[in-house]
Length: 259
Image 1 (cartoon, one colour):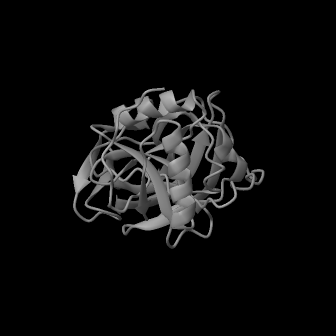
Image 2: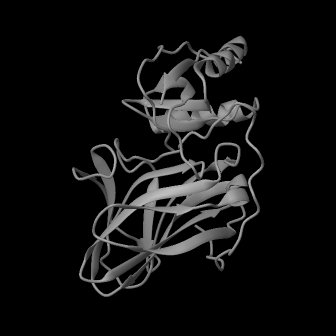
């Protein structure tokens, strides 16, 4: 496989990262398989710093208004705002090529908030290629940013869509979403990510990601002042450098980022 040379990086990276009939919530999930030796969990994040990024909102069977708002974000400068103009539940989700995330973490997280006089409740979920859903517990959402966490475990093994089911009581005017990620239950302190890029857009990164999957190279789109593919995150620089060298021998010019 021939791949273009890419610019070496020295910046810190954050990982970034779709509808069928809803199933009943799954109360428990099998444990995720153990991570590859030496690997730690990279956050797989949608941060909305460069736009909506493929996220869609549906309410009462129709598209709801979803746009990126600047300022007062949970992380960075921008977040996704969904106008709650109709009655009933709201589904906010992103589709993606089917992926196995269990090797990178066992928990799905998102930062959420809601405005208005009513009450809002959010439930994280994932769906496989067949549309079958597994859902986390429902959490009450306030007017300030809070993080909801679902230890999804083995439900992350076959993900083609992830999102949040919202339930409202009373006049909820707007719901907010930011910093969606997959990671270990305990989170990370410091780690080193192997990345490939940059790409001019998320679509370009995803196209290359799909191509790499045919060669059994697992990657995820990430954004930090540009789009890249994350190829793995490690506890030590030496372990990340060894992985970068291995991938270079396969024709991928990669870089190591301190996260």
